[in-house]
Image 1 (cartoon, rainbow, N blue to C red):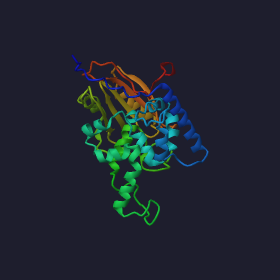
Image 2 (image 1 turned 45 degrees about the horizontal axis):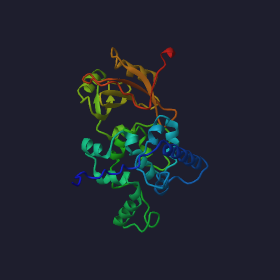
Image 3 (image 1 turned 180 degrees about the vertical axis):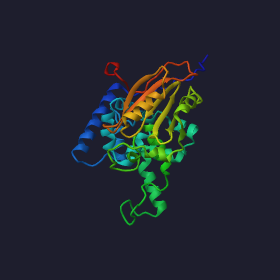
Image 4 (image 1 turned 135 degrees about the vertical axis):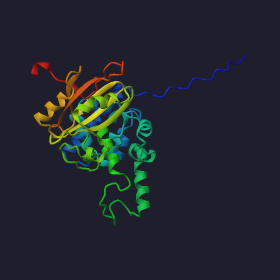
Length: 304
């Protein structure tokens, strides 16, 4: 009697710790090239970088999780990329915490636009296709481009900047200003509320999902507070994003959570001089344990 069992599928090669170490060394090399004034890393260079030990292309990017915990190294790596390649890296799930499917189902992202920013192996073909449609002879001939990406709305970049915690220019310019900015808040449909309404607003959000909101605290003639509010499967993460927030702004920010049991700390950014105060607690309707993001560092209580 012959067996009806189907042969087991061979497991795909999983990425190893050695692969991650090799990629981190390659990233270090790219940074040195950039610091030495060599050309920026392009999508073609990135293809070679994404080859594993045996020359096989791999789609997982776990090394980005390591870099997120060392934000200064992440900053140097991103600056070593040209802007189109930088977008590919920033759009990765390991960077923004959302898969392409999640972006489509939660926020209605267009698949074609996401594919243009996430398919490393086809970005060159996409660029050529778009150039042909516009009547370009080549990227550098005949046409002097005024707008960086006329087919991509700036609001798209603004939302990615919010997710990835980078200034908007890092998604639009090869050589962005090395200063923090909240200009992307002005391009998004922000929730503009008073300070007393912040906690009720957060409590009204679904607890056991992953969602990110741009919230502006606007109270009379006081300085506006620009908040990045993240619900991470029961964990609430509120980050003060004001550019070099004043002492008064920081005190007002902390006062918003008076009486709550919180974790108080900060998150570094790709701009070394910009450190964002961050408050974390568990959503009132969640039973899950608190899960701080990899960038979060808790304040030392002995300092205050």
